[in-house]
Length: 134
Length: 134
DNA sequence: ATAATTGCAAACAATTTGCATTCAG
DNA sequence: CTGAATGCAAATTGTTTGCAATTAT
Image 1: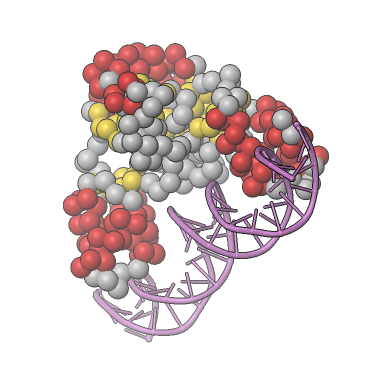
Image 2 (image 1 turned 90 degrees about the vertical axis):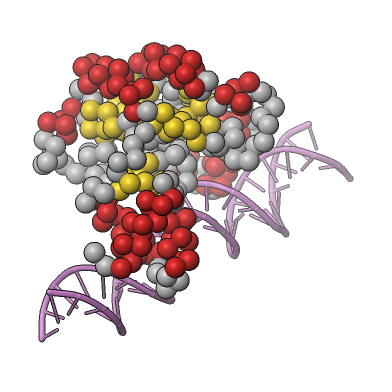
């Protein structure tokens, strides 16, 4: 466990959820020399070791967090906000898919997409289309 | 509706599921001059018109299909295979999320990730790691 | 000294943008 | 003639690779 690896892990823990770029920025605040390549390589390593996981929030960069920090992500495609729900909300679905399709669901790897409470209300006129794409 | 737009739409319909690159390749087979930029712009337009939709299969390029072609995608992160399930498998979940979180689920925009029947069996030794990443 | 790790530059893939050209009304 | 649509090259973003310099064992 090299110093830069420790820094990457620290950043992941501290940020809770972050893209490789954000993690890199955080690491570089204390150790400016650390290259983003190293961040990618380290994240890859930590993931294979099972200490971090990544989730696809639908588009762009993936989102890394420590392994224990496990939940389902609900991303709003109007405002881009990301909510979290306990993994148990997918338990029933997981059972269904296992039974009917033999598919072993990994509840946390991809986010669910839709409209959050606020945006669902104002369908036509989203309050603040900060990240309305995707 | 210009000729190239029609070609793009034809390709989407014909391919059922395809990335912008694949769509472009198909279009270019009949009209080699068509630029990938136009494909992107057209897909964007067709999507805003509600005639096509795109789905994120977890990584890489999104997957376009005609709007009516609606189902839930199950991608295996061992072999990369993509299975389909009827949207109804998410009905109960949709109701739950609407009730507990006010979240309006869009069942088709993101794929569910996990292990397909074959790979689930041979966990440790996936048959053919054609696309084992992600 | 021997292998693993790092930094850096360059390669890549996917996508977007600027702009001059072409096309249709 | 005027605005929309297209093609092309270049810029962007996210990520990976080759390789030489560095570090740990």
